[in-house]
Length: 112
Image (cartoon, rainbow, N blue to C red; front, side):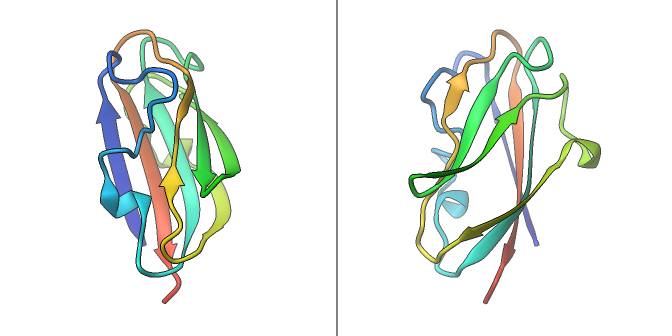
């Protein structure tokens, strides 16, 4: 299991910004994997930010910052999204945060 986390300043968490843009270790892998969970928290108010988790061009989840602060295990949205080897994972913001950092966590399992 791998747990990835990224924090974006509100000024960087703008519409169309890929949350995982600066994380090549998340974006692609040489092995097939499964996204088993995702969470987003932060900003100044719960539910003021939405992002679209994608594998290639397929949307696998819409994710909201369900609370302020840091995401915990209680905030994980369970998934079972297959990611083929070398397929890109992205998470563009569709509704941007207003204030405070935005913290996103992604959990994956390698299949090989």
